[in-house]
Image 1 (cartoon, helix red, strand yellow):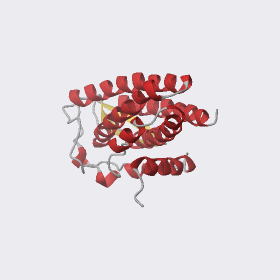
Image 2 (cartoon, rainbow, N blue to C red):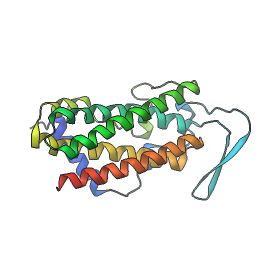
Image 3 (cartoon, one colour):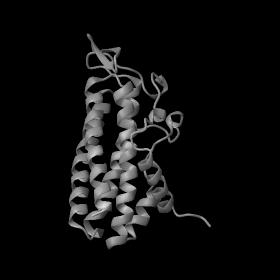
Image 4 (cartoon, rainbow, N blue to C red):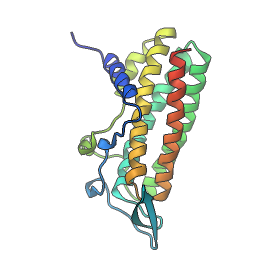
Length: 211
């Protein structure tokens, strides 16, 4: 029997939660120029990753920085789309509140990331298979959104919380990889902010599953 996209997503969420805390840098590599060229603006700064250092031009960026932003933008947009469903379908105030916070926060981050890629004269997105070497774009599929949109009340809440936990875990993986391999200080700091915010969201989502 063919399983629905939502069923598959819930199964993947269970795997993500069980592997929480395990490094997942497989999404990213380093220095893959095919995903964008590094930019320089004069002067260099030393970006340190766990004792190792990388010289990056002040205000410049690397291919990994570009790839991170290109992957995070559609991921955050889909997160906003998922979270917006809760406003009219969730039966619980705490779920609606958290979802509203996600909509606001990730919408702001999308604008920041879009502005940065535009300033760098880099494309906002790439071809469908441009990031296959890094695991592809880890974005919850539109079919999952459609299945969630058909639910209401307690059934929606349970499915929504599980799907969003998996979705935000993917953001954690991408952010931690950027912290490890990125070169642009502002983008690495953005990744750290995403790590902190998504970690707290996952904690709250898990708590909401066991009220």
